Length: 243
Image (tube, rainbow, N blue to C red):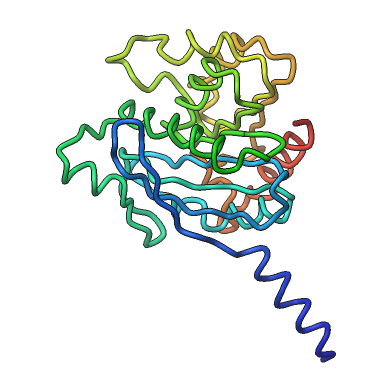
């Protein structure tokens, strides 16, 4: 095989999978661990990836490199509400437990907002900032997107009003202010969990997707092990083109 071709192939592979660990502080001082996938020019659009319940940044090991190939830089964080997935331990959760900090779902919102602030400072030349959530964090993504003006788009994988202790419309009352592009998807049988929220989002650039088959809960729907992953990816790619 031609040596130049081999060198180019190695370089391309590195570009796609390059990953760097980083640690930054949440606004209350808790250290947050994150994986950076910054392989494109610094002015490329940037996506912040938030994991689902009892999981970690490892949810995006397969997804983030594919976003790199699509031209996006990204960062997957460990929220304080989480655990372990794909052999990746949630380091932020572990620190929070040691410090006796609360680790319920809504306690992670401070980490998510702090991640946005971090990226806005550290990667200030990014042309767009997009937030992406899975399960409980996908609901919080919609809340944040309705409350912050510095977000250019949001992707929400299986949201819902998951926080009854906060009120029946904890997510909806913020989502009604979303004017930026928003994408919602889930497993086929989960539509009723978010349909009312979706209908109340005023954005003219809102899109939803449901698979023909049963589908999956959260961002894992994009993992290659699941038969519908290509359909989910097609829908995500088409949405990202609109931002």
